[in-house]
Length: 214
Image (cartoon, rainbow, N blue to C red; front, side):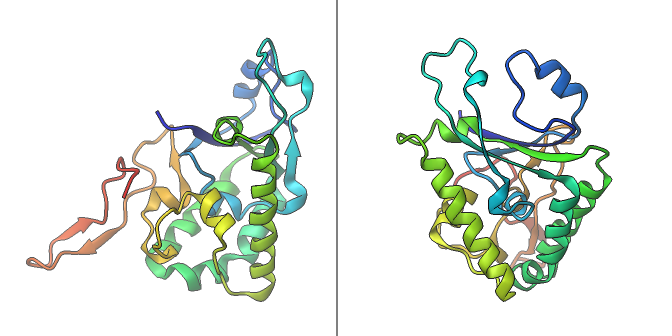
């Protein structure tokens, strides 16, 4: 099983403590899930100042627990970043894939909760060195802010790593789930992108949504 990363719009202002998960579920919206990465559309919600560290009172009874970095921003500030970065993303993705970015923006706008939270504990498990995830997030968001200011989307090695883009494919060749993750309440979202087959013009998916390897 792949390590999972989750995104929620929520009224919580930090990672829930062990005894707060029931309350968290009552105060959170759609659960989005990605496998072993933080998709690029998720990253576009955040800035460097949104990197937080889980404090020691979250370890429960786990002797192997260690502090780790996660992402938290106000929903409105995240929406504003999505808007500011939209033209840059459109130029990088093309119209078909940008339509999914527009859907992502609309989904964030339609949520009634105050904050956006990315749960990264399982992603941290993949790193041997404590603090490695934080360093990767800092490098990724520094680069994203730089290219946002320049207005031209260019991926860095750190962004490719954190977004799970391990091949040489460009953003305008990514499948939908690679850009946005999946909505667990609606397994059909996002729909896979399609292309025209060379045989009789049949429209077929680039890749089935459930294939997470290349």
